[in-house]
Length: 152
Image (tube, rainbow, N blue to C red; front, side, top):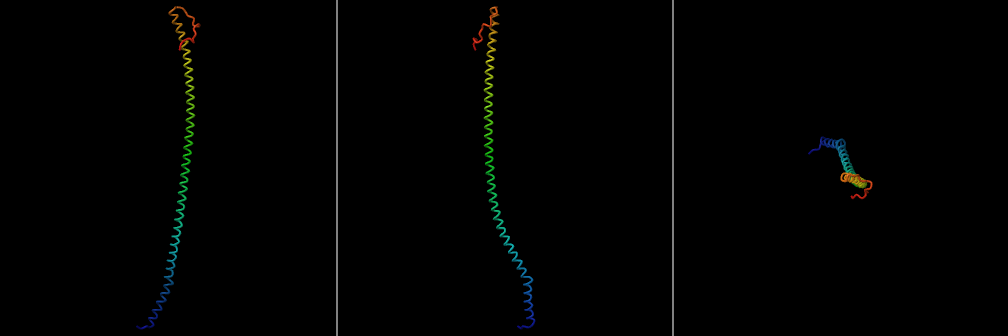
């Protein structure tokens, strides 16, 4: 095999081609690939941090939500107790009022019954007078009859 100038020019032009390709193509491509790898790594780290932050926020949200639920349950229980207490007071007031009304009505009925007795006693005396007039033919002195002696 013979080494002549053509071979030497071919070797030199190949070396120049490799150097030029390295400067024009390989280095920028490797630089872009390295930048992309760094970007991917940064995004991966950022995603991990974001995931951790989301998990912390979720735990915080859940605890705040549970706290709010507990407060709501306590408030509902308090309002329910207040409602029961107020309704008990209102019912007790109505019971007292009804009891008072019943006692008043009982007293009114008692007074009405006594008044009716008095009217009946006077009516009995008048009926007795009318009967005595019809039977005896004479007017009997009604004033001498003691109404309290009429039996109940």
